[in-house]
Amino acid sequence: MWYRHEGDVITLMLYVQPGAKRSEVIGLHGDALKIRLAAPPIEGRANEALLRFIAGSFNVPLRNVKLKQGTLSRHKIVLVNNSKLNLESRLTSENFFKTK
Image 1 (cartoon, helix red, strand yellow):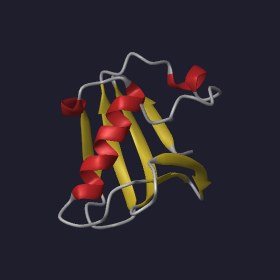
Image 2: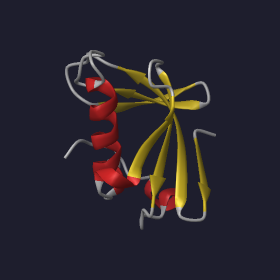
Image 3: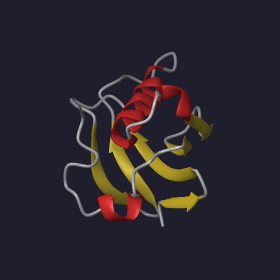
Image 4: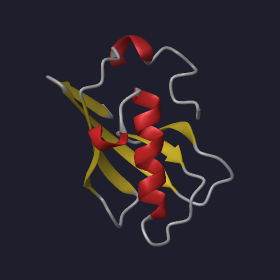
């Protein structure tokens, strides 16, 4: 499973591919959700773009999204705090992870 929901915290296991033409969710990559990012892996730009993408997708301020693990790796663990979205019901929506 690529996510865990515990209290007010959603933990996401992600596989990130930087340097894409646009930011989008591709699907599953093993036990992780694969995300392409339209940012290069230079000076933390891809990590910043990832956090902004996740914040927009979960409708939370950027300060509520933290990169817990994987700063220099394609495999990342991201925490989302205080999201009011019901993740389980939103997974069936095709528009959930579209860029805004």
